[in-house]
Length: 86
Image (cartoon, rainbow, N blue to C red):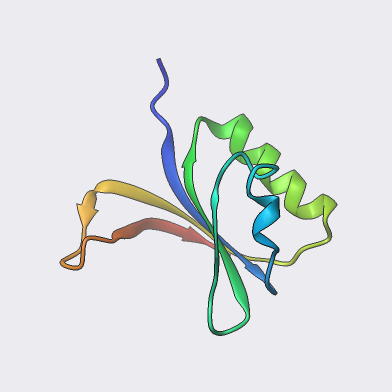
């Protein structure tokens, strides 16, 4: 059984929260700087690639993709990125 990996995906602009289901249930958070954070578990690499294709199909600008390591929680309880790709 594959354990989902947690990801943070930042895109330029604010994405309407109604898109959450289309993005496989990822949480959509509007950042104050005008960016959108998509966050949540992704089952495997093909599922991640599918999310990136959806971002492309909507002509959205991908700003960053961070894989989160669940064991590396910071003091405030949030997860810190294991790696970042821009």
